[in-house]
Structures are given as C-alpha cells and as structure tokens.
Length: 453
Image (tube, rainbow, N blue to C red):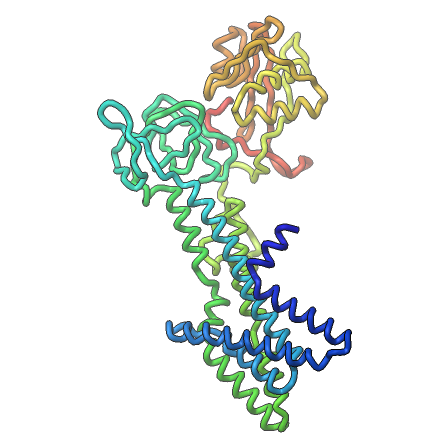
C-alpha cells in the first residue's frame, strides 16, 4: 500500500488525471453532468498548455518529437466537444511519460548499483606501509594491497603465493577461482579470506570492471533502430497527419473528423512501448548479470533462431549440488556426509552450503564441533567427540592421512576429500553433465581451476 502511495505522489499528474475522471463519473451520477464537460475540457486544455511549453523548449534545442500531435489532438477534441476523448488522450500522454520515467529510474538504479560496487579506493604500497588513494590515481606498476573480502580495484598480477577470488561479477561463474603467484587478477573480483598483494597492469579506466560499467551506461543511453526511426520521421509524420486530418475535415465538412484523425495518429504505442521495452529489457538484463551492448542488439534478439554459448563446460544453474558420496571402508556414505557437512558449518567456502544442504535433505544430524579452524583455499579441520575431521582438497587431506588416494574424476566433475580420525574416509563426488536422463538443473565445475579438487 505504501508503495502505491509513493508512486501516486511521484507521478502526481497521472494521479490527478485519474482523479478528474473519477470526479466526472461522480458528477454524472448525481445529475450534474453539465459540469463534466467543463471539468474535462478545462483540465485537458491546461495539460495541453503545459505540454506545449515543454514542446517549444525542446524545439529550441532542435529536438523534434511527436508530442505535437498529442497536444493538437487534445485541443481539437475539446473544440469539437469530444471532452471524454480529450481526457483519454491526456491520460495516455501523462501515463506514457510516467511509464518511461519509471523505466528510466529503474535502469538508473541498476546502473547506480554497478557504479556503487566499483572500487573507489586502493591501498597503494609506499615506504613504510600503505596509503589509501583514489582508484583513478593508480598507475601501471603500482603495488596494491587487497584485504580479505575486498574488491580488486584494477587489473593486475598476483604477487602473493595464492588466494581465492569470486569472479562471478566478471565471468558469471559462481564458483571461486584459485589464483597462484603470477596469475592475472581482474578488477571487480572479490578477494577471499586472506590479504594479498597485486601489481597493477592497467589503469582504472582500462580495467575490466570499469569497462563493463561504461558499456552498461552506453547501452542505457543508446536508442534502438525502431526508436531512432520514430525520431527521424517525427516531423514528416506530424505534417502528414495534420494534412490528412484537414482533408478528412474538408471532404466530410465535419471538424470532428479532423479530431478523430489526430487521435488515431497520436502514436502512443510507439512513443510509450518501444522506449520502455528497451530500457526495461536492458535494465533487467544488467540486474541478472547480462550485458547488452545496445538497444539494437536487444531488438535483433527477437529474430534469433539459434544461440551459441562460448563456455568451457555446460550451462549452469549456479548452485553447487552433491551427486554422490564415495566412502572408504569401514565408513558409510551417511557417516562421511554427516562429518563433512558438520565440518563445513565452520567454512566460508562456496562448497560448504551445498554439503550442508545435501545432509539436511537426507535427514542427517549435524554435530557441533569442539574446535574448528579453516585453512584458506584448502579446507577445514574440526574436532568431533575427540576425532579429528579434515575436509578439503586432496593435497590438504593427504597431509593429515597417509592412505589418502585420489578419486578418478572427469572434466566437469569435482571431488571433496575427507579424513576422519587420521584415516582416509572417502570423497564427495559431483557430476555436472546436462542432457540425457539427467535433470537440466546442473552445475559446471570445469572452470574452477585447482579449487578443492
């Protein structure tokens, strides 16, 4: 309810127009119908005058649109006594402007969200420590500190031994990527749980994330061919409509025909639907991480028959899911999953949630650890009832148990290993192939790099 009130206040002209219409209905019902014509006509002419002022200002800026038809249609319908039609044209005109403004505001909010997420400061290495500087002042070759969970400010190379980055805002992949010394890091990626140093290889304006932001801003300002066509022929179409209306009046001898032609010629669907559809479409796409280069690209998409995705593995749902547990004797599958999920409660890794969810789906109880610690990018070590549980990548688990052995996995698969009480207990295995008899909901792990596999 509060949202409706807020919208009514923001677009008060539409609210007043609807209120005038309701007032006219009430007057007609109480027997004061003669006031309706004066109310509708007076209000419509006032709106026409308001729009005419804005139209003249636009013409002085050499911007010619189709609003002159709507203004002329309002005046003509009032002069011939079709006051209800005049109010309807006013409602279409003010409602169209409100819809376009609403779509523009929504698109601006999505763009503002991208801009707000863009790094504003960088921690540049100086003699004796680090100094915060605006990201625009970062130069190629500068050594920067990226703290835990901070956004990488510019493109660079990693100077620290290793880290894990969430690159979902850049690549669309929801799985964190492990980076080693000398690897490229992209601006916009979110650092993992340890502070690292990078050397800038690009200035802020030339970095990946800032280019994406600029592309979205450029797309929001672009016009689709349909909209550009309407702007190009606005003046000829207006002159033709006025001439056609004049001919209809001259042939019929009835000025109502002139008003009817102008009402029909008022291209409300073209004025309202096209800009709102394109701006709204690009806004929604940006919200979901899809970058549209321009309105023209969005228009061409409607004619697409085949879509080719340039992707390493399968198209993904974006949420990791457990598909199989491979226990080692004497452990059972439920026992392995119970300890894995219990340990993962103390992990911030993206796999933790999938393991916990899988255990709960099977109705397995989760234990509370006596102690637990996470080794960044490697795994978790936890104590349960005097037994040490180690969960994570193979090399990490192998350091704690001599009998650990790798599980054979193919491309697009991932294994998380576990040791319980100093003994290798098995692995939790995930397959990601889409198609065949599998459900289409699947997750692609093929681009995760070394990860916890």
